[in-house]
Amino acid sequence: MDNGAATKHAAGARTPAAGAGTPAVPVGGAVGPSSRGLMVVGPGAAFGTALLRRFAAEGFRLGVISRSAETVARVTGELAAADHPVAGAVADVTDQAAFTAAAGRVAAEIGGLTVLVYNAKLSIRGTAFSVRAESMNQTLAVNVTGALTAVQIAAPLLAERPGATILLTVAGPRSEPAAGRFALAVGKAGAAAMGEAMASLLAAQGVRLRTVVLDGRVGTAGPLRPDEVADHFWQAFAAPGGTAFRLAPEPRRAGARGAAQLPLEV
Image 1 (spheres, rainbow, N blue to C red):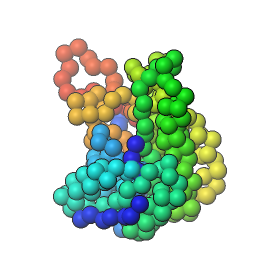
Image 2 (tube, rainbow, N blue to C red):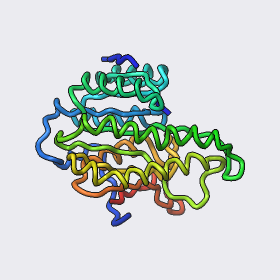
Image 3 (cartoon, rainbow, N blue to C red):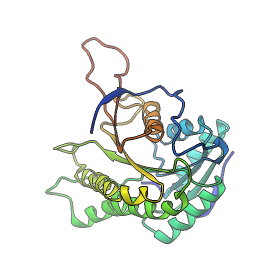
Image 4 (cartoon, rainbow, N blue to C red):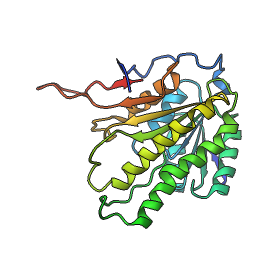
């Protein structure tokens, strides 16, 4: 999971996932590039930097919040090296006061908030019959309650801004979660349910809430690759409609080489 002083450094029809250069579909009216801000809570090592780069390519100002100072330093440093300044803050989403202050500072530094990505997670290993209640509560505090906190804090910052969107990272449906990841699977399912329950309330404030379903491991060796995942988040933001956007690797053909095509489901 990733989360207070701000520091700035320079289920449905399938269509193919668009390439990284796909222009945005106008959402919520005209939005000048210099006025759009992205804040990622929990940038993570798997695809956080790629996600920020993808939105930077569309003219977004960038902000991150993580509980790890090392993560903030790494992400802001990598993006600064690519000439993309990032406003970064260290805060734990389970500390509501600290997180509220950090989010406000980051939003101010990037000139206002247009998109919130909640990607923070906590995974404590254990099966349905071995995980301890204390461990389950710790994971839910980040994966569900933390997401709720972030949405509650971001909503007034997003309200009535053109294109205002919240993207929640959730996991794909599995009857049997990956070995030892029962608590994480339950938490991500809870986050998806929470998002569905809040969507209409947020819509009344002019804010879209969409879930981004990653049905597979993200890494340079796949099956889901960082740049493809980053573009999937962009498409989830840019799409004119839809509430759940699923990314899953297609089965490889015998003898096929290279990455499988990754379908976008709206």
